[in-house]
Image: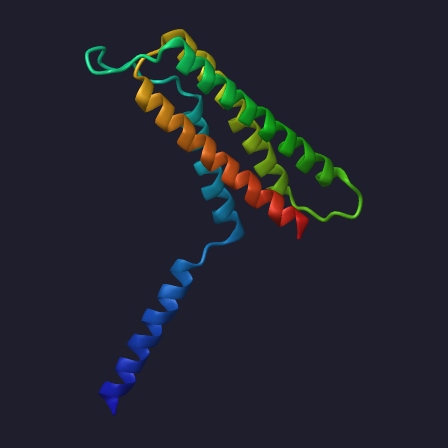
Length: 155
């Protein structure tokens, strides 16, 4: 009897301990989000690394112009979507919290950072394959978050 009670108490402590450590308060979530945003901003705004010139491919002019034109079109599209979200945010009758406003500001900053990255690469033009892969991946991530945010707002 004594053993089963101690086992039950130990099991309950383990379950409650797991529940309390797994749950985060709103403040902790906000701190974690802001830390992620700062890390993302540092990654996005940092200039591309200079790679070894022996193994890196440099894009030809046509390939670079095509890539830059497509990227600028996506950036403008993102800007328009962000502007729409900002207008919807200011409409009366919408109850959107400050977290939503912060996300829009962060996404706008990240979108502007893509322009900076394009300009920085245009000056250096090193390690084309890595730049193209990373830029497209980051752009797709931003577009995915924007679409999710827009779908949340429409609900």
